[in-house]
Image (cartoon, rainbow, N blue to C red; front, side, top):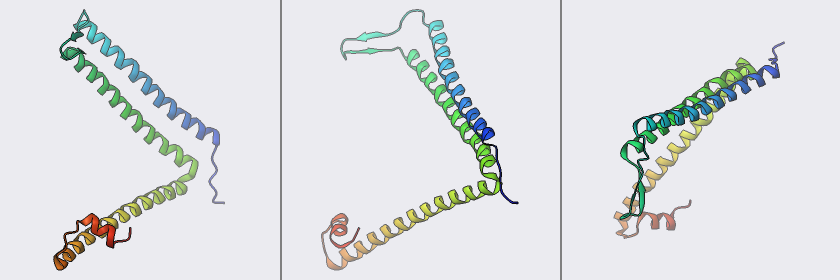
Length: 159
């Protein structure tokens, strides 16, 4: 008997664990980013540094405050990327368990084949467009026409 059997509870547990890890990482990044930014800002600047610019009618922040806010956003982006990597690396073993080794290999083969066919189709479209441009140049030179490529394409080409 060559049938792959799996326990749905273990699969559901692994997926729930992955999702909970990602949620934990994102919540920690929100908490840590806000805490770090508030601590550094309050430690360095005891008073509010925002001031009003009446000439431009805007409220400006000092350079140091805006840099600290930017660093906090960068930390959040970095931790968000880490959460995405954790999600992609933790889902693969769960899929391998759900589909079995042969099913997982088949899934990866199908995904690779789809990506290759899309790339091949894009290459064919680029080659066709290059051939059209080359033919348009020769046609324009031979007929002495002043049609632009777009006008020529609309008038003489299908699609």
